[in-house]
Length: 302
Image 1 (cartoon, one colour):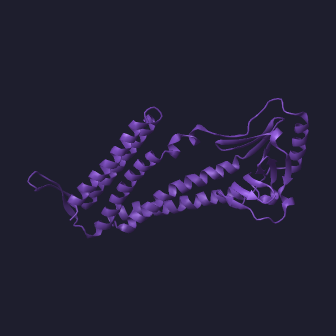
Image 2: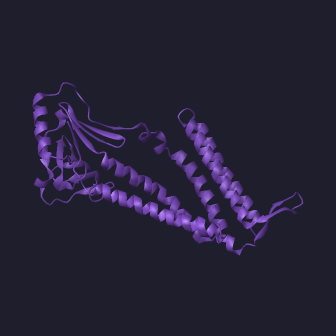
Image 3: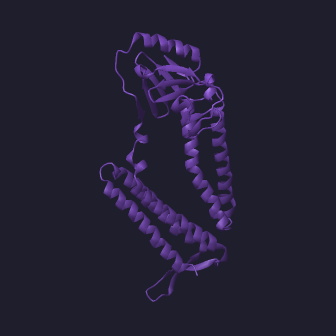
């Protein structure tokens, strides 16, 4: 049998957060594209607005992930165990390990020390419940609305619709006994277990390339108001200007650098599983290219 998580406002709050982020980003992008760039009124404030949009992307993805996880939260029960499923993950709790089920409301007003992302109607993370111990929360209700599946050394907090029905079904299946032995484990989709997420070398190289590129955008944006409309953009061997262009053309340097970074990122991801060193080489080269563009920009900007 499968139970949905108890309805809560958590999903609505998640959608509201997503809507606010998208709305603010849309407003900032409209200001950037509609006024700043078209009218060539670029300044360091322009860069800061673009940076806010960029930094909001991982926050948006995190909000989407947690909102979808809440909406897809399910509790499946059979004679072998309890299976808690949500977007991309599954927690397996063997039925033989569950010693008892405690309604959270019976604990009274206890103070729980938690870590993890949570908001009203969305209880995710790990905490210490007095009298219970380490507890993983996978629920849509606060502690008082949860069922605590107590196992040796830890517990899992869930919030199925019809908690009484869940307890009765659990007792009926527990009395039958398991016909297959399960191990307690947490399963994740492949994309969540990719080694890249914990590869410090990869993140250092990619982070360095991104920071250098963003720094160049910031430098040019801050210098832009004080530059002449036309500038010498290229010099011959004698140091004489042989190409004149508008100051907007300066942004071709970080834009090309960004394209190179994106290309090397994609190629590196393709290589990563087979030849990790090749990925590091591509990402390190992307960082080096950004530095070269910095040198070019400094030689042009007076």
